[in-house]
Image 1: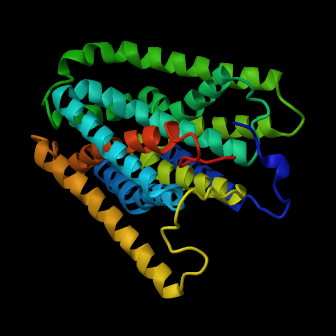
Image 2 (image 1 turned 45 degrees about the vertical axis):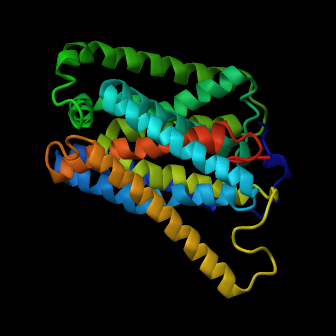
Length: 349
């Protein structure tokens, strides 16, 4: 993967990047002030904000990523893509029902890979990745940036993180984490130490290998912002707003920066010669089909899980949605990015 910043027109303004940074800085400032004033936010309020951010704001963008990727692909590829997606989602759901604690670990890993992997491609398409020269450095970048989503809250908000982890496992195995609670204090610091080493390695190697483009400085500033954001903003709010305000917004920046179309097959919207009515109808049809498919997976998940809302409708809703979003996010990353070598949801030529 190479940086394409050097071939971008100077007129492309990084508005979406600025928006993502401003959103996290603004939220960080609000909660710094709240801490200084001794104000706290109840878990129920945090849960409500999480559900609005993840359901109303972030889910539509996930569907759009797949649509943009599949829009001009062959019918055969689309069929295989969808079949692979559903099979992997079913496999993860089955695994979670059999081993919910292991499933929780996979869900945490998916959040790290989605956040860090997506961010790496954004860097490549915008500010540049000249300081990230090897596969090992790319892996460090993914862990450093995506790991902030999970590793930092584990250290900064251990009680809240453990509460919702217990609820997620409790959907299948009530009290399933109780026997492991004694180890949580140790694993918390082990995870924090490993994450700190990853950040140090990522930024240290990047500094030594940096070109004179400012790419490393932008990367370092954003990584520091992510760490500070997840260390200060309550974890449920932080995660719920991170994906719409940071991940999705920055993927818009990547798409705006990449002027490259892969046309393997017929356009889902009808192509350049299509009428406005045709484009509108096809877009509506794709939207409805995607919404129905997502709803079907959610309903199936609800039916199969023994206790879909542990802890009540609000806190349980966060637990249910956190696992459900992982069910569809695992194939989102694996099928949509890792296995799609030609284009993928994070395409950078």
